[in-house]
Amino acid sequence: MTAEPDLPGLLAALAAADPARPAEEQDAAFARFMDGLFDVELTRLRSPAYAARHDVVVFRREVPPLLPIALGALAEYTRETRRMLSGTWYDDEDRVVCRRRSAVEFLRRLAPGVVPAPERLDERLRERWSATGGFFHAPQDRPEGVPETHWWWYTA
Image 1: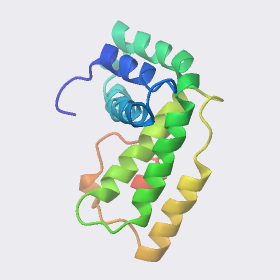
Image 2: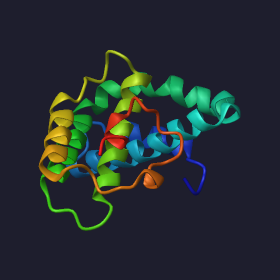
Image 3: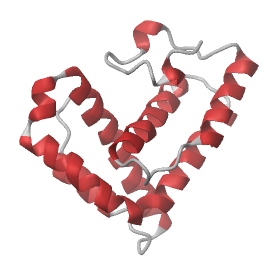
């Protein structure tokens, strides 16, 4: 993370994933939210001071009530991540997929019972590893502080 996440902007992006909006707008807004959520949650895990900040606590409290309107966008986000696993990789696609999967896991932990387990995505991750002998990223490419429960970063 290079700049501190714009927490109100991330909440606005989540709200913009409303199904009343065109699908492209929903999906783009939700992807922005998820990218920022990854940064927020990873920073929170690394820094107790950041985790205790009032704006971070409020952000984490305000996300779960907004999620029901974004479940369609979440489903598309996980489908798109599965599609990424089917393509040819040339650069850092493995890290992008792992980052996206971690964002889903952070969201699941933030809103237990609201976000379903991405079983098909995890199945596709395992298939990709089996077919390729593991991802291409080296341990030093894994972001600092990623929990070991995020096995997709640690499997090779």
